[in-house]
Structures are given as structure tokens and as C-alpha cells.
Amino acid sequence: MSSRLSPILDVAALRALEARHAGEPLMERAGAAAAAVARGLAGDRGGPVVVLAGPGNNGGDAFVVARLLRTDFHDVRLVFAGDPGRLPPDAAAAYGAYAAAGGATMAAPERVRPALVVDGLFGIGLARPVAPPYAAQVAWANASGAPVLALDVPTGLDAATGQAHAPCVRACATATFLALKPGLVTGDGPDLCGRVSVHALGVDAGAEAQGHRLDWPALAGSLPPVLARRERNVNKGTFGTLGIIGGTEGMGGALLLAGRAAMRAGAGKTWLGFLAAQPPAFDPAMPELMLRHAGVVVDAQPDALVVGPGLSTSDAARAVLARALAAAVPVALDADALNLIARDATLQAAVRTRAAPTLATPHPGEAARLLATDVATVQGDRLAAARAIAERLHAGVVLKGLGSVLAHADGTWDVNASGGPALATAGSGDVLAGILGALLAQRIDAKSALRVAVCVHGAAADALVAQGIGPLGLTASELPDAARRLLNAATEGSGRGSAPRD
Image (cartoon, rainbow, N blue to C red; front, side, top):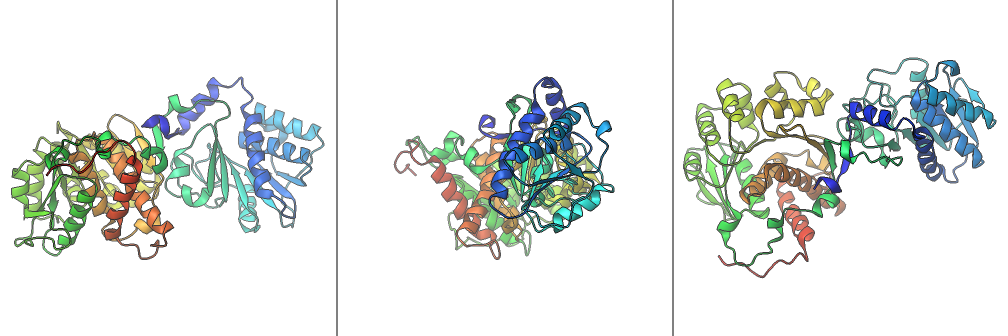
């Protein structure tokens, strides 16, 4: 799948890539690519193009943009408060070329309503609040009323983590160079970057990438073959039996949501194991589900297990979780299963030493408990938090939230681009757990199952929003049907047979 997905490079990998291509005119290429974006944004809007140039190589990119836009007869006002004699070599050369072409600079923005503001103040190297005089320029850009194009990364946004250090540029578009950075796609990044365009500058960054951005159109083109249902000589056992454990008193809805999602994501059979003393006899909305006591489901040895939806942290919940962790099948851990593990060293050891695949789906609060820290620390570096949990549990992990981060014990990771605020609704995580469990039951490898489940879950919400169903008021129970439609549409025409036998 990775070859079809956009690579993401962390800052260290980007620096190494730049060093290997130091002999190439990367700054000139970056400026030319950004100038093309700027022309489209400025259009025929009245007013000058104000270019804000910083004291480093991001400023060098800005000098190239300003020079090229002047060549196109744009009215360019370049703001540069630095010392030309202290610029890095490439940026100094770009400044010299701009000056030689007749360009002038000013120390601060004028009182003018621009057609476009180009933010070339600070790029990937900034991991702290912007200092004067540049902080005032950021505030001016945000208050200008003009569209803002950020070069590589909006000034104030940490490229490594996605954490915004106020003041931070709020861009309508970001032209980023060589490859995506983690901070553009998770944390505060998606809200601050606007539309992101990636400009490779003639350099192949794919070989360097341990991370990728998950986009449904790209992922849908290479789904695991079992989802296409090509084989005709099959039965429900072919597609696995999933057991889902949870549903204590007052929390049965979480288990039902997960089960309904699992059936719509292709599980051959789904057993729901309730901790409640008196589980419902059947689900009238989906009578195909088999409802049992939790221990019965674990002992029946399904092909995969999900533990957590509506589980609680009672002694009975801990006991059934321990039994599930001992099963030699893939296990997905969600909700209170993660809270139990966070406070119990014995359970943590049981997770780490499992031979079968383990997946975990924490939200930031659960992640903080797993790492014995606080939510602010988790959100301050979501990629680091997800990778730490993956290493600690020897599991595949999705840290849920804007730009959900997927991390694996082998060091690889992804950031999901689908979904949005419509998913901030009760039960959404239960639906994700059910989809994930269904894919595991169909014997899809754990890494692919996590990728597909997370991405189609978000894409289902996007599809519903596009139909006018949300974002306000979208409910979790509406997601499974939308996910099923996306999965079937992605495999349509792939040689699926007629109806299988029971």
C-alpha cells in the first residue's frame, strides 16, 4: 500500500535529505513552485503581494518568490527585518539575486490591504514562540484580511509535532517542500495550514519515509483482496468469527454499535460478549448478531477479539480482559480495556508478551494514562506519544484525534487524513473498534487492518457530511452503512462472484 500513499518525513530525515542534495538548486525550485501557487491565489485581486521574509532559509525561499513575482509585474512589497550579512549562504544568494533585479525591502509592513501575504518567516526549524519583531508581522498577516500562503510550514507551527506556538500564522494555503511534515497533518496543523500542496523539487523522498499520509482515494485502490469477495465457493466461516467483549450494565449500546459495524465491515459472524448480568436476548435492529455472556465468547475461541466497548474497570472486566489477552488470536483493545492496562503492570506485561497481533485504539486521555502523563503532553507531540505506546505495548496503535496517528512496534507510522469534527460524537470509537475487529477476523494483517479501519471510518464521516448529514448532528450509528458503501465501491468491478453459500 505504501507506494500509493504520500510520504511524511520527520525533521531529522528532511535535514538529511537536504544535505544529500545540497548541490542542487533546491531553494530556487522551492521559490518557483511557491510562486506558481501565489499567482493562483493572488489572481486579479487588487493590491500588492506582501512577502514576509525571515532570517533563515525560509526567508531565502521568500526572496525567490518575491523576485519571480516581480518578474511577472506583480506589485511586490518585501518585508525583511533581518541582517543580510547574517543570512545562510543559499538565502544570501537569493537575497542578492532579488536585490540585483531591482527589488527593495522594508523593515515592517505598510498600512495597505494586500492581495496576498506570503509567509516566509520561519520554516521547519522553529520549535518555540516567535520573537519580536517577527511576532508583530505574524499578527499583521492574520489581521490583514488577505489570503496567506505559508512557505513550507506556517510560522509558529512546530513541523515535528503539530503544536502551535502563539502567535502562529493562519494560512489559507501551504506550499510545502520535498515531503509532508508531521506537523502539517496532525495536532493544530490541519486547522492552520489550509490547503497543502507538496512540491518534491525533483527529489524522491519516498525511500526515506517511515511515515505516510492515509488518504481514502489512495488506500481504496489497493485494499486487501478478501474485501473484494472474488471467490464464490465460500461460506460465513470463510470471513471469520469476531468476538467483542464489553457491555456492562448501562453500557450495552457501545457493544451493539461495535457489533453492527463489524457485520457491515464483512465479519462472517459476530458474537457479542456482555459483562452485564442479564444481556439482551437479541438485537432487534440486527438479529444476525449473537449475544452471549463475555466469558462464553472468549472461551468459544473466535478468530479475533475486540475488548473494551462499554467494558468498565470492574474486577470482572479485568478478569475477562486477562483471559482475552491469553488467547492466541489478534486482539484489538479499546476504551476501558486500555484504562485497565494502564493501571495494571501484570496486564501490561501480558500485552507485551503476546505472540498474536495486538492493536490499541486510545484517545488522548487513554494515551495519557498509558504513558503516565497528561493530555497536554500527549497532544504536544502526538507522533511521539503514539510511537511510545506502540513500543511499550509491542502493539499497533492509533492515537485518535485530528490527524489520527498510527504507530507500530517496527518503527513505521502513518497519519490519517480522513474524518473531521463530525466524528466527535458518542459511539464513534465503538464503531471504529467494530470495523477493525471485522478486518482482523477476515485474517487481514494487523497493520493493513488498522490502516483501512481508521481511514474508512473517517472517510465514511466525510461522505456523510458531503451528503448534508453532518457535521452537526451526525451520529455514530450512521457510520457503518457509509463505511460499507465505500468498501464495496472500492472493490466494484474487481471480479466479485455471485451470492455465496450459507
